[in-house]
Length: 351
Image (cartoon, rainbow, N blue to C red; front, side, top):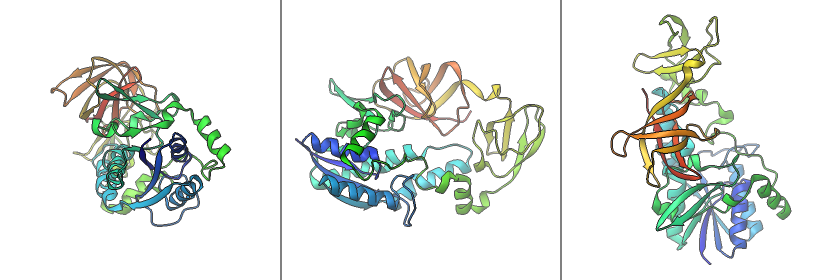
């Protein structure tokens, strides 16, 4: 069997991943990343908090595997936090988990594997890798609720060739049952539901504390071009948002466009927030693209039927859904599927 480096966040998924790989006979080495926090918290609802890292160490000890912590805070600030903040300041909605997977998590797992002579790396994602005719295919996990391929479309063939995803064959409740049966420290820990570097999920406060000058009021413009109110800084808003607009209108209005050039927020009816077509750039292809696909434009939605139209070779595509989709937000990710195989994906572009 092989030596495998497992990214351990302290949660139930990565803990059971380490256990399953050891049960398969692999030599398992656990690694946790110090991404952001250097302070204590009282819960485990963010991955890689200090409490979560302590939990990972406890789990590694219980499983009889090695464990070490790698401080990646400098890179994390440069490659994840700064682009996240900059995106919101420019009126787009970036996804920090995708940025972390692209620039931090898998890169550092591979570095650790190289340093200790490990053949493979692994994480607790609900996904799968299938090797077909020399190509590594990224595939959905069997649990449709927990499938996490949306966040993994940025991986390349070199990384996929060394990846093991044991949880792709499990449903979440089965994973919890395994952890409970083993009395692992992570068995009862809650899901990670927050962005790991943003307390209580309050990203506007996080951004305004870092960049106070970003609190720059501007007009909220209605469907007829009239000014309905004043916004509190572009970073406080995202496409599809209804709450917090503090405007009066005869019907509910939603953010339909963020215009950084004019420091303006445009609002319209719910129907105006739906779109069938969007441009997608900054593409990453895992498998050859096809015309007829399904696609997701947010992690929790079901992938929907669509067509891909190539615009600049394979560098820009037009994504056309069969049915209009709710509030595509520039900066968010669109991920393309053929059945349960991830073809690739990219970033939704501003109109």
